[in-house]
Amino acid sequence: MDSKPIHPISKLSAILDNLDGFIDRTGLALEQRKFKLYPSMAGSALFLALSGLILLIMPGQIKIQPDQAITARTFPSILAYMMMGGAILNLIKDLIKLGRKETVPFSEVCLFTEIKALILLLFLIIYALLMPLIGFITSSVIYGILMLFYFRIRNWKYYLLLTVLAVIIGFLFKNILHVRLP
Image 1 (cartoon, rainbow, N blue to C red):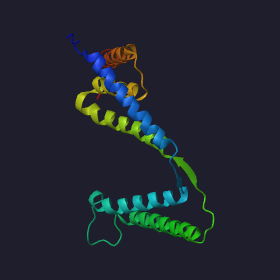
Image 2: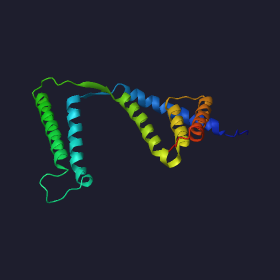
Image 3: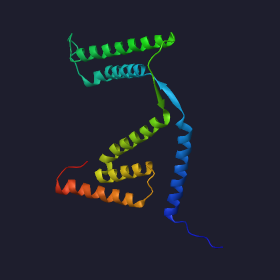
Image 4: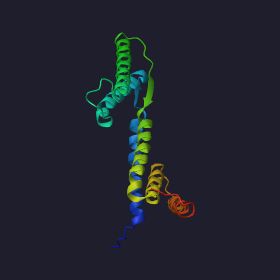
């Protein structure tokens, strides 16, 4: 019995093939899924949440003297309450329109497209979080490799080029241009 040793490259290739198959199957399942998004209602909900967050964190951010009638929090609080009130009124107006079966402008959003955008955003967040921990060059290489994987680039030359360029650019900025990198 001849047993061939499994090479790490072929094992990685098999893992990537399985991952590609999973992505393709998931993409086909999600491609036709769409939902309605009411921009005015989504904006109202966003501003309602934002004004609530502002009011929640303001006491920890702006210190005041307890014996004053008008403080440093007065004007920002008024603006936050006005924003909250406007968002609530707009939300109620749109909900009444929906209840009366009147038309409310909406956009049809493809779930698959939004998930792809969220994955790219996740890669950027990982990049930003890794940069202070492991440095500019290493985190840039990891981010670049993630992007190449995401776009299903299999040619090893691109991975090598990405790594070499990240090291060269990091070296140039740090040692020649004297730019402090994170």
